Length: 229
Image (cartoon, rainbow, N blue to C red; front, side, top):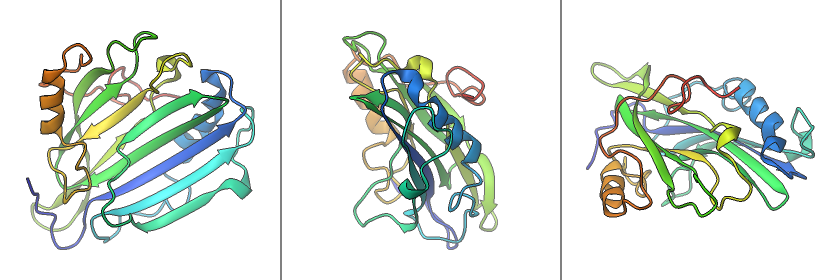
């Protein structure tokens, strides 16, 4: 399936990621998550507007926190990028909250897409055996953003970092919220096409509790309402 992307603005991504050293439990990356949430729209290059860039463009900030108690990233551990992702690559499609092996990390992603809706799937383990992995799904409506002319509005999908309550250091999978569009947009979401997820979920009911005909996402956090603090 292909989607007309228009002459002036393609599919784009903004991403912020943080790593934390010396982590022993799920709460130990709380400061890093709080920093990402507080600065997601203001730190460079994420503060840049969705500009007239080709499909595959990415604005990325990444940093590191030397201890769980640090409230700001180490200036020497920050890197930024604004440009096309490498040819043949796909976007990182999940916001997630990860803890394990003495370290932790968090990622928040947002997308500019030409379609007004996309599906979000919540992934986390309900028990130590992770009997069910794909927990919930919903339809997210994007916020109208830049316009490229008549009938060419672009839509912003900002995927929050999952709440720490979904994290458990004994579970084999970190909680994540994944975006599943209705188009691959030229291969940028080749492994996260919604129709392919529906097929996989229906074929594996023992591990997939997500609906293949989901209702609308809640405001803020798509599954629990209100954005994480």
